Every structure is written in C-alpha cells, then in structure tokens.
Length: 447
Image 1 (spheres, helix red, strand yellow):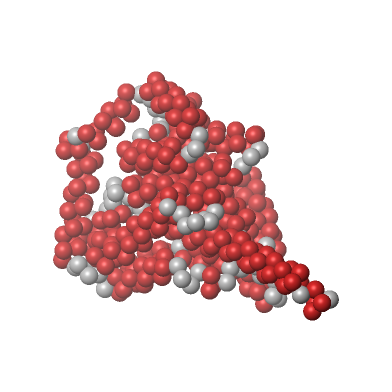
Image 2: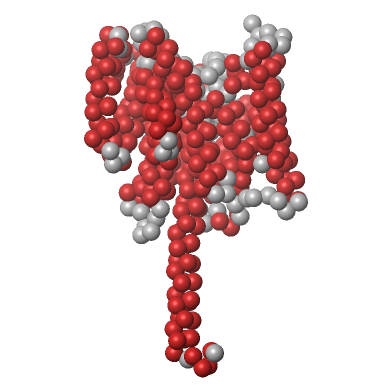
C-alpha cells in the first residue's frame, strides 16, 4: 500500500531534484541531462512516500523549458540553429510517425482511449526536441550519452550483484512503474545501454575510471543473463558480436568473453538452460503459442482495417477483455494499431537509421572523424538490439530508441561541423600563402 508519509529517501530525492533544478536554471542543457536521469533511472519509483507521486519529470521539463526561453530572450542561450538540422530526413520521419498516430487515433475503434494513449506517447517528443536544440556541441553530446548509460547501468549493476549473490536463481527486473520494469523489457534496455558504455569507455583514459566502466559492463552482462529473457539473450549476442567486430583490441575482448561464457555455464542453473533451449522448439512452448495467438488477432485487425488499424488501446473491443494486454511484438503492435502506413513509416525510420549508421560507421566519408564513426557503430548495435527485442516485445513506444536517433543526428551534425573546420583552415592557409607569394614577387608594389 502506498505511504503518503515523509521518509528519508523522499527528502533526499527532493533535495536532489532541487539541486538539478538549480543547475538547470543556470545551464538549461544540464536540465536535459536531468530529464534523462529521471526518465531512465527513474529514482522517484524507489521513493516510499510523497516523491513517488510528485510530477518530478514534468516539473523539471517545464523549468528547463522556461530557463531556455529566458536565456534566449536575454541573448545568452547556447543552442543548435534549426538550419543545422533542416536537412536530416529522420526528423521529418519522426514528425510523420506521430502525425500518423494522430490520424489512426481519430479513426480508432475506441477514440477516447486512443486519444488518451496518444497524449501519453506524444509526451516523448518535447524532451527530444529540447535535446536537439540544447545539446549544441560534442562535449554536451558525450555527457548526455554517459548519463543515459549510467542511468540504466546503475540498475543493471544492482541486478548483476543480486544475481551473483543469489546464484542466478532470481530474475532481474527494472525500476518499478517504468516501461522496462518487466524482466524481458529490462534485458533489452541493458543490451541497448551496453554500447553506450562502450562509447564512454573509448573516450575515457583514466585507468580507475576505465576499470569501473569494465566492471559495469561485466555486471550488465550478468544482469542481462539473469533476466532469463530469451529475446534479451538474442539481443545480447548481437550486441556482443558487433562490439567484438568493431573493437581494435580483439585480443582482449575475445578471451574475456570466453572466460565470461565459461563462468556463466558454471554458475547458471539448469532451468535457465532449459528456458533458452525452448527457442529450438517453439511449437511446444506455451508462451510462444500465446504470442502467436495474439499476433493472429493483430494480423486479422490489420487485414480488416489496413490503412489506419484499430488505433491505440483497441484490444478490449477485439476480445471483450478489459485487461491491459500486450501485443508481444512491436511490429504487430504498429501494424494492428496504425495499419500498414504506420508500420511502414516506423520501419522506414528504424531501418533507414540503421542503414545510415552502418554507412557512417563502416564506410565513412573521407575526413569523417573517428569518434563519430565509433559512435555510429555503437548506436547501430544499440538500435539493432532494440529491433531484435521488439520482435517479441511490444516496446514500440519506448523513448530510448527515439533518443538514440536524436543522438545519431547530433553526432552527424557535429561530425560535419568538424569536417568543415579543417577545410576552412586549409583555405585560410592557402590564402595566406598566396598573399605571401605576391609580396615576394612584388616587393616594391607592396613595400
């Protein structure tokens, strides 16, 4: 039962929120980092009293927006000019996706419920827009990547430690009252955070910090395995292969992963292996059969309403079941709720982003910065983990994959900016050289 009293954790969280608010008033871009902490770490969920129901996220967002507006009015706001973003197709795809969500909500089977869900899903966009504007250089971008990685990893470290203490007999769960509290969802979130940790590791040169990041990576692997999630296991394998493929220190990573695999085979209980082996015989797995039954309902709905689908929260009218039932697949979810156009826009955004990330990571343009190429490779791994996990989980409306796309857009902008600087400098040097030559050739004219 919820306790409305005042507890130490509530006071500590309130003071921390006040501190973040004070920083955001002075530096609005730090408010974006604070929003990432509240969104992905979700510390308010661990408060036993009033802070659990206090609108921490909404309050910080409004404060950050007001602070940015005030700084802009005074001419002191550091922001990314919209013209720097105007040519990136992913922004228009994001807006188009949400526009189609509005169309499918208008024609939904249950319009009132659909519009309620639409408002909830639409809340993802304003913080993303704030990040696009206020993260205006590479230093701030790296800080945001690190904050997102830490926010998810702190819970993974806690779960990994608990898994080791309990001998992997308990499943690891995410923060309560969040989108990824479920063990399967949390496994995918961890897999998406691991590449972000790898970015942090690459940019860090302090030995102690690198050792701590490596420990976080190890415990993240332990937590993902201890989620007992089969989809999470597939996502973890894909992320690991991409990490090994990308790293220049394969001599270090491959032996470490082999040792981890040996340790896991020794420590993991037999029931865990039994659950993973069920992937080989899905016809006999009841959970898989339940998913197939739900998918058939979704496909039938899409065939009946191919353009707009059933809209958000169409499940009760389809099955006369008033419970909150999951479609168990992001792909089926998009198709059933928003029709073929909604699914195609979403797939275009996700697969198009994957293609662009792969090209920038493995076939970069001449002069493309190495750090940007490395970032794109890790964003590719993270987004791929999401798409693999989304095959069996209804996580289409998570904030994290859309934030990854925003991070990729910003990386591209800053890489282009960095590529333009040397050419400008070279042009300046060439001009200076020409002037010097003219001076040598016409000493009287210039003297």
